[in-house]
Image (cartoon, rainbow, N blue to C red; front, side, top):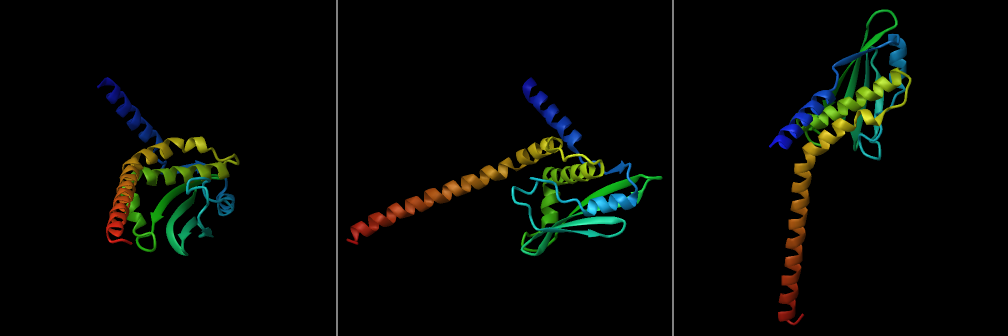
Length: 187
């Protein structure tokens, strides 16, 4: 029982530490920040080993990254830029999921899976921070949220694996029954 409480406490603390920041201030003038972010790509490895098609738009006070699947928008990151004193820029980031398209209602799925949503947000925050602070992207900063997102999705992973196993067993049984019928029919 004490072990369970310790694990639960650790998980809650880890989740709190991994919540994405709502905004950050960088010691970079707004025009330079916009220029750097327009030239910045997606967080590496977050969307799998093969980066999805994407494009970036300079909206003046916003930099928008749009990720696509089959030419349809799936999600977009919107970085809102605001001057925060001389030589400083506040960056607020939002994640917007498509409400329809080939991937279905991504916005709803992100709302239903906050750990996955947080993983994407923490990853883009680190990508932005690394670009504006002129340093390498640090994967270690997103490992905790990646772990939490993985654990959140373990149930659906196992359910999917169980369904695949049941379908395979059903298929094997049907093949054996067909072989017996065929043998009995002399085929």
